[in-house]
Length: 157
Image (cartoon, rainbow, N blue to C red; front, side, top):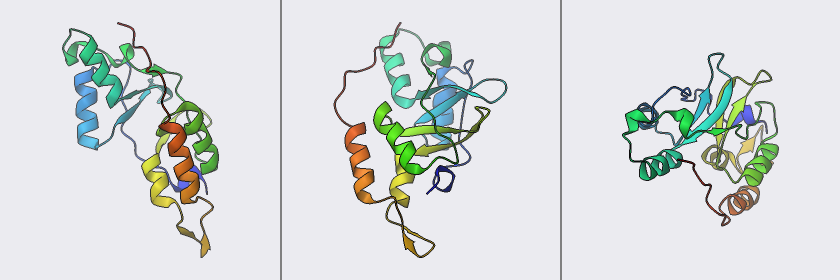
């Protein structure tokens, strides 16, 4: 099963110049917890999550409109490609301990988001009358690795 068969194809995104108030508004309106950060050519240059925003707002004595995404976004995020096998993307999620991956084309441009929610909805589904190669066991194993305890990432001030 390919990533493009499972991913959400119209993701919300922001730029490095977006402030956190605007990023939160985008997340609220699009009901998402991650925003790929793109440059002027729509190439993915980072990601910012709802958790990143909460930690930034809780550790800086500044208003959300005063903090730019560039100050909190994770640069060089883990990504996958539309034609990757979903199991390859799950291996990346395990390694990176993330639940969502921006999906980028060969030029690095944003094409979608693959989330564990998408994967769960497609696990053990029938594909062309055959059982899906994406089993519940594979999904649960990935989630165990993603949720394994780890030290928190330190966000510089």
